[in-house]
Image (cartoon, rainbow, N blue to C red):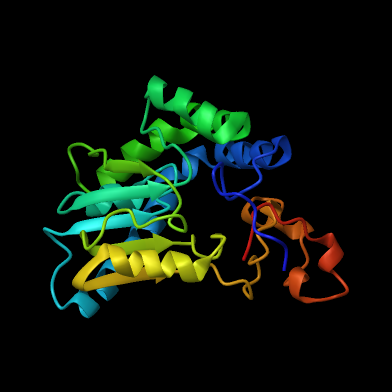
Length: 240
């Protein structure tokens, strides 16, 4: 296992190669935004039902922490309709056009993250938000409270949340055990932690960016798990 990098900037390698492929994919799928958002909403609703089953009550009127909400913050805005949402991320996350936060991102996360986020906003950001707002029948998408930091470093707030949730994040953190300890410390008694992992053993668990674009045919199936094809895989994110 490789040594964990610093997570003060970002969990992924935001080089030109990776950013170019992702932005090109976004351009190609602009007309499929509603379809993509509808699929995401179905996944979020499934997660919500699971959380309600464990909590024994609707996910409403709760203090919720989302770890690693992502640039679109779709889950945060979905649950934010009926809850108080706080997000924690190692990236500064602008929501729409927020010049001050773009400047903060450039300083804190570097030019690669800044350029990719700005490009995404120009290409597809507004369209994504409009589709999401329509699908969740919201008049507006409220901005969650956004914290900048690493869950491995410290507890965001002691005994402050009824629910902590995270999607496809914990496979990237430098110290999962420490991160889990901090999550548990942040939860109130009886609180729940919903975690979804991108399994390393799945076909694209290697996080080669090509597997998430129209170029996935270039990547051998389960190539990272077979010694004969491991050299063909180019991971674009740190995996613990």
